[in-house]
Image 1 (tube, rainbow over the protein chains, first blue to last red):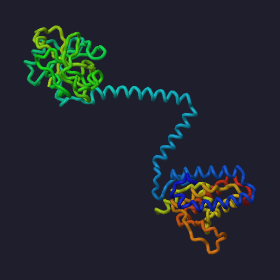
Image 2: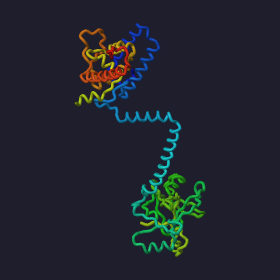
Image 3: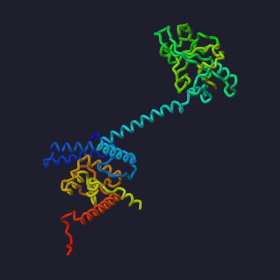
Image 4: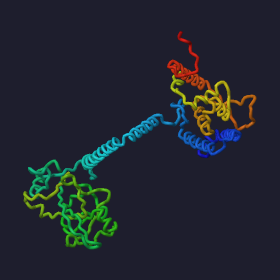
Length: 294
Length: 124
């Protein structure tokens, strides 16, 4: 009887004991106090306790006149769900086909939405990202190609709508020094590239226009390889076999990698200076710069 | 009439509910009295367990169909833990409506000769 709510027991507890006592007395007099009697009484108590807690009555009314907490709409839903399950159980082949079809549809929709959400709906996590544009070249085969250095110079000189441009090029390089050697993706970028995106270093600074051996680490690389140690600023490492100095660390929580063709975002581990003399090359054939404007 | 709509919306009653309301019609009974009366009226077919009865009593009280009554002047037992119950006006209306519905069903069954033992006028 402790299974009943305390309010119910306070209201009916003593009375139930009296009634049960009378029933037991009668059952004793008629020789019906065996296992069946106790089983039925205990089962009825369990059933009634559950129904009282669920605000349902044994074979009770179909409607509540006094505004019970029981949600009539939900009971219809549960009834429909039970009927649906019984129907599916009677036709297992149909149920299997239906479930597989629905699963495939859900999987396809989820995949499509993930792509659309990531590419179209979710804004880039840069400062005033709506002001940013990616500049691409194109030819008969590809709609998005890098820019040649000669074209980059022309774009900067002739465009009036965009106030500032930056350029970037990424290649893998080996990083040695502290810890195991590892290959990281290195971005050669103009000094204004990260500031153009609105990214301020967490520690240190961005490299200057004449600092060819200064590098800025991504937050992921700094955390993973250097244990998020702020003292990493000024450390000497070897990148691509050449000595470099760590001058800055990027903040976490923001992906500094601008999407490339097909909206892929590389995982750049280190940023370094794009040599100015490269950008001065009037070449218009070899296209390798990824350009961003604001 | 709103009350009539209220009554109709509760129909049909279940066996348990109908029998509990039926035994309370015109009288007051305590819990064991209800169990005993239902058992005797159904010839032993419905033997209500304690838990079953009191869950029903709670619901019937919540629905306003029965209520606690003063003990009759001549109570057959001195057990002070027992409480007596009676039909409310709404409970009586619901019982009457359900009885009418069941009577209608019985008439339909009679027309189909499904109920034996009832005297019928000869066709000749």
